[in-house]
Image (tube, rainbow, N blue to C red; front, side, top):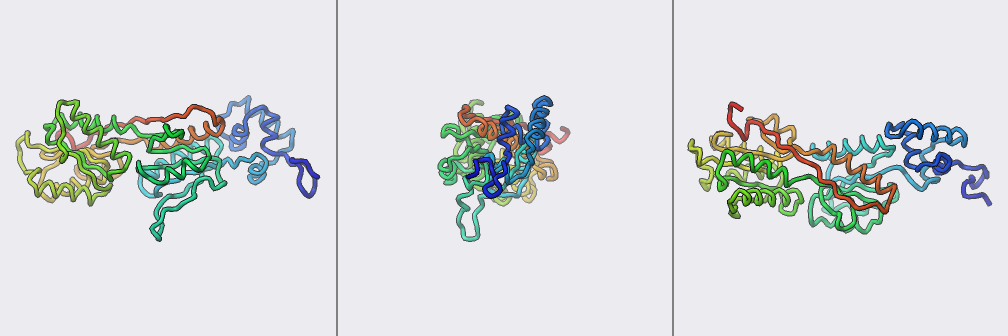
Length: 355
């Protein structure tokens, strides 16, 4: 009978990536990084690994690495969808960091299929060592799948650290506070509104809460009609603005005290609001000032250019990859939640024309 490291038919010894790691006295992940020419490995360590590879006669074969080490060196990324700048930058950041650290990134979506059902069993399929999962809804049933999968997982956009999963989230509180503080320089607190996405969306929840808290901190208790929920679309932004215009909440006036300001939960909503303002002959920013979230491409091509909260999406993907590999190398490490800073980018939609 062949030994565990011998070919079952020929009896020749199979040299695995685990053997190389043992000979070089380093982790399997380090060997993989050397094989992928990752700059993250120091020269002395890389030399030791290369020496072990040469001495043992190891041939890097992807299938042999999987069978010999019981590790694929592939990590999965599950996205709600592939399109959109938010997901594109996140994917790019995750892929670049995974490559740098000697891993391959396998992506899939958790979108609803033509039958109306969510794709299931995407986690723990055996093809990957660990998963990065984007969960945008606080009540998403996918969270149950993640918790039951039993493989190393990092959650993006929702904090699940209390449930034992490393997480990476955006500092929505800071972004919303910065926007409110900026807009309150120009308008009265009672004339400032928040227009959010879906009510259960994690980012919308955080931004709406921070919006209300910022007004309270300024000594003003916001009324219920100052916070609205809908969807992340231009149509929703335009619908909300047209309804406000019809109610005379946005009455055309040159009086400074009648100026209106809006913090939108994303740039699409903000652009819909600006579109409605143009149709109603409201002047932006003189009569209506608007700030969005995401700092997407449309914020720079809309007229006037849109002020927005910039989000570090590429960094979010990279940080998530580092957290996951950290977990793969030490499953007993402390559970962490990384909160990434946002940044207010001021453009013409929220400040004086001579800005």
